[in-house]
Image 1 (tube, rainbow, N blue to C red):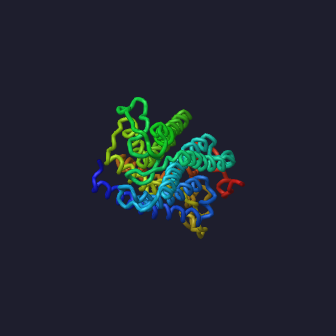
Image 2: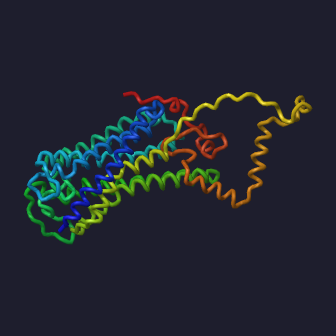
Image 3: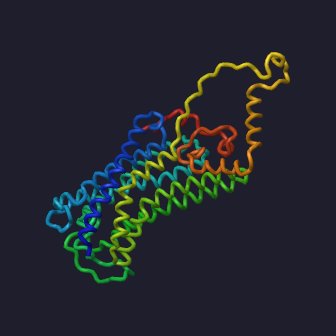
Length: 388
């Protein structure tokens, strides 16, 4: 039995987290929409889809228990069955589309690197990605609505039947005795497994498998691309960390409910709070993997050659650029081994040299330039958008 204090925490903490998500998602949307360069790139349009659905999720979280029928014993209940069904429908849609967009990034990254970031090969499929990511959750949400599957829970109106614990138990669960549901499908546990828990598992596992396959692909290209493979591992770790931070607790929460017939308040609270906090995690990932359009360096005035005067007409004299290179190499050579290791290790915590999700220009001597052969596709760099 949930206590009054626990009810208050379930109402307050997710809303506080949603407030942070609102600020972060709004900033990300504003940043993308105001920049023609960002709007022209696939990665940013995918993250724009995440941001818009996070705004929807935030609205649902703020609405909270106010949508619950007033006759229920949920703290703050002030709605009816119609508002409850509407909230449950919108919650399911928003919490399905955002992870699908984020999950799709791994597939696009794998395909883009296999194609050496020639985006003309993947621009044509982007519109179908948007359609699938949006239409599939909406279709499932409509089916759940048709069977009266959105009802009151302790967290608000969600995908469930009432009273809590009713319906047929999942095969193999510890408690196989269930009472009849007064509203909602009788086979609610099976539906929750196929339409909630199983998609959550896929959303966590598919990107993990894809990023492992991407690393294997790069590793098999040869030892000369060792630095590229290390970069792929580090970026994959950051990408997957965000995914697991947001959705792992929800999968655990469903597992305990469906297979153990056990409600754990802390797990449920963490699941609600981490989902409400998703806007912060998504923004951090967006900024980390985002490429910035490099501005052309201003033309510098010509400087006298070095050495001056007496060496001006000497064909064997060094140019200023050559001297600069020698000076740079001298400085590097003068560093101790520990200093060089510290300098290289510090780059781990900075933005990657080349984003495996967004792509960007790299210097000619970069390992990524050698790996990509032709670098970033020039047509894509100019910013064409797929035709509708």
